[in-house]
Length: 228
Image (cartoon, rainbow, N blue to C red; front, side, top):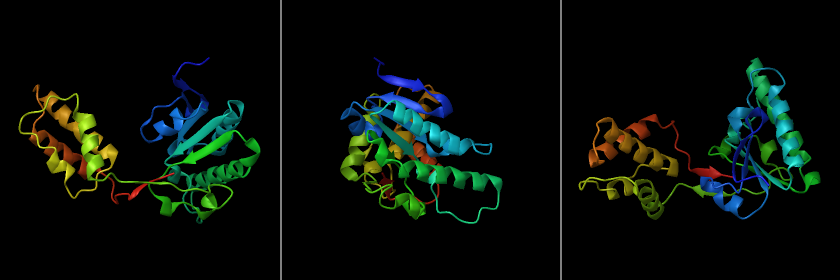
């Protein structure tokens, strides 16, 4: 019996049993299947043929450990619309996606292997990846509403010592489009600001500076939601 936890696998594949992992905790906790997770960018390899080889290895491991769930996060790293590739790196990415399509075409014969893909750029994905028979169902996870924002702030500040001047409602009600990850980053950065100055309490000014820093670093084009 393998204990709950994270095990290292070849090619950066992560094996997680009963995974408690943010958005996918409900999936993992409702099944006894093995959870295999890989990030799309990890499928992009330096040398010719390594990307497709990694995809084949991922599904081979899934077969060996079935019943299993294959979760590929940030699939847009390799699943974008095809075009005339001008460089070796671009051609290798397209070869990797073609191998992924090939593996998905053999999906039904596996039976006990299920696949979940996640992206916040669904419009950039190649239609071939989303066609019926490969990925049939799309589920949107929109950005958190006000009630959810408030709850996420409460979670990430519950163990922090806050100054009396902290008003989290200001950030909850802001017009900025926060994801759950943004809120976590703001709270973490605010805490670090206090630690760097060796203060025992996190102030409202810390949160404001943290928010400005996180939003500045945020990539251009705020996603409307996460898709699976």
